Image (cartoon, rainbow, N blue to C red; front, side, top):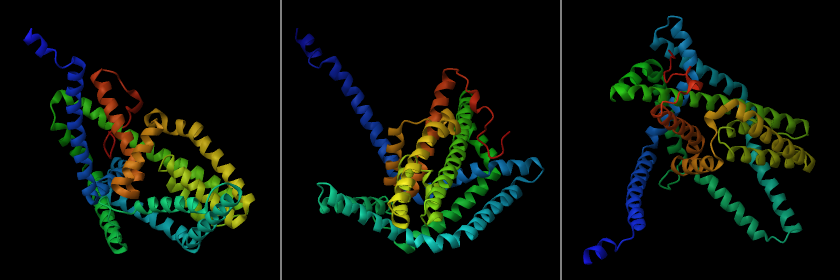
Length: 368
């Protein structure tokens, strides 16, 4: 009897939950340690991720040159130089316009916020202190995006040095990825058992294709939204069109949050520079454009490869911002999408389920 009671003193459900709990705790500790390490190594991690993104953008050009008998190293140098010259040309064209108008965006937004604050206080049962506290918290959150992961404010000189160093490192990494991407991936696959290599290669191909879908889709959606909102702001009698268009384009790379912020800024600018009528028109067009993008254009442009739940996107953007600041908010969603699709491919390969949708994409700067 004693042995029977001793064996039954812990309920089987409790025992099972305990077994799962300590395993989940161990996994959580390892995951948190990995995220902490990545945040501490952000000066190395962020250039690597950016280099992968730029390599994916330049891969078709590099592959075309290689197919026309350019040496891989020379093709990589020519591709990167052409990319940098294109950026410099765009900066020379857009830079002076932004320099003339960008300084007026912040005063215009602050003036519009003051008007909204007065309207809320005068027409609703809201105290001015409550509205000002909300503004302070929002401004504090936006400033926190420029902080390091350990909470120290990045000074102007330190930030400039980090940006320059990261840019140089990203360019060098892009060169080596373009030139040696095929050999590196072959070496990486050879580190695993032969029976695992086909599955890993298919997972890599799917991740590479997913990244391409995201970059092309985000850029196209950004252009559509920037043109629609900028043209509306101009036709409705507002000004500061160029900065609003640039902000709208960049914000397209931050799903949900980016579009909302860009839309609010556009409405605020319209309110100050064109009046209430302009702000209303811009707000209506911004809402319509975003709904069309989310419901019509995005599913067609992105396809099934980037259908992520909004909760996943929100948590990813917030986590990326907390770990890596503004760069983290921009890179979080594509990184999550790539990882999720690679895991899906590994599971599908294990179940012998073919994925022909990405059969024409290879995880290589020069597709075979």
